[in-house]
Length: 96
Image (cartoon, rainbow, N blue to C red; front, side):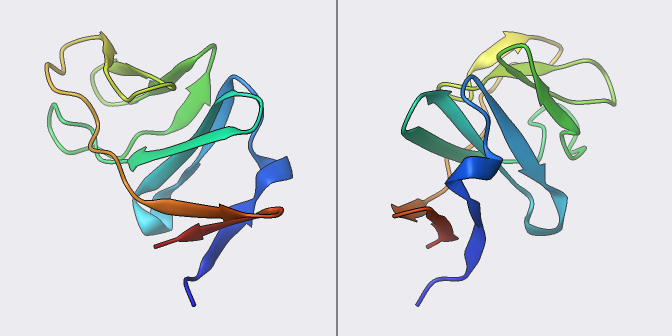
């Protein structure tokens, strides 16, 4: 069985949470819709630090990515964050 990463209640609607130890960020763009992306910025490999105001933010050079699809919202990054597979079962979000 896949390892539990977090609970659905820990991921705010329109926001998300960075799990630096797993190099993954989980977002909830709309209520009940959960997405996961690599937490490694595509610009120079820093780990993103926070999710705020609808973007996933990298502290190193200011790159920002959309919570809905990981696409670039603000450079210098030019490539989206890579999607990651998660499984949502009840209140549990697991890595797959």
